[in-house]
Length: 398
Ligand code: SAH
Image (cartoon, rainbow, N blue to C red; front, side, top):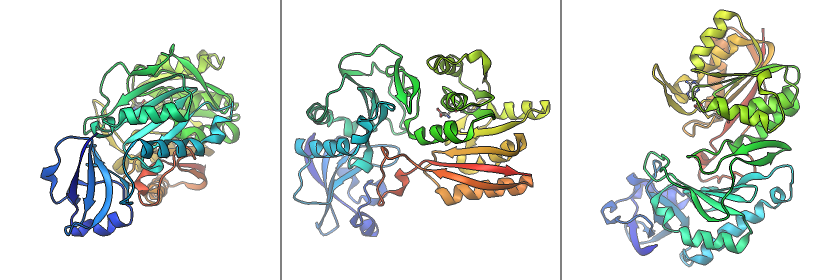
């Protein structure tokens, strides 16, 4: 952490920031040339030097830093980090007490008061994700706070420093005990194999916990399930445990085959009884259509953007067509689970894609339930973009 500098915000943006918008946009700054070292503390003012807030300079794909307080008397010091982190831990008390779920988010960026920082707990191993070099300069403060409020086994970190939010390749171990990976964590009683020192992803996306539970407990029984963009097959494993007749997992990445087998195996399920296809989902759709394959449940969880050899997929542009393809493969009275983590559109727009897809496919549907982020991923009203997850369960009719 270095000195504090004064950053002036343009008139046009004052209302937004006065209302508590936490992300500092480059376009909102009038003296951007004073920004030099990331991690610099910022005193934000209007053109007339009237105080607006305090924050830090850190460049992410989204912006130039985060506002941490609108209180002029609050300092950004050890006490500040201690407060934020202990408050976040207190909010998760019920998670710490639940033996059936040992992996959850401890600290969710601006939703817990510090944008650009997340901390996840994997059964006593913490994973800190730094979304800029700026927030990384506060590392010692944050580690000290963690040491004060909790006992952990070890800490790993993911650096997502460059402006595209891409992971920086590294040994991710920070302190404490090294884990022997995979470690097995639990989610609602289900085993999940997790690797904390193998690149940016750990094997499970914690924000889909409630969706996996709904699939297992309410929807999977007796159904033939197609899980597209399946990654490590987490949805397939939960479906299998919920009594699915069979599952087919489809993902382009070579790693998805061993990773999906691993998740079945740690739950004592014979992976040979399930299909795992390493292939482009769009190719699989064509193949399944030609072969006359159908399913009773189709899960769609594409990345917001993806580029494969043949095509680019953008959720904002292409989700409707994806649903339309899924409709073709889904039996009447079957379920489509449509999920997106694209922060660029909200639930209403997402539902409009679904409506349009069914209209074009000439089929009727009913929305059965919807999900956003779980309790351990809090967001704030002032920054609705932070509540990025949208999942709907849809029943298809003839
Ligand atoms: N549903 C998963 C997470 C999906 S992450 C879960 O719940 O754990 C997105 C995945 O999409 C990645 O594993 C990536 O390899 C895969 N992917 C991206 N483009 C693809 C394509 N065209 N066909 C198949 N898989 C694709």
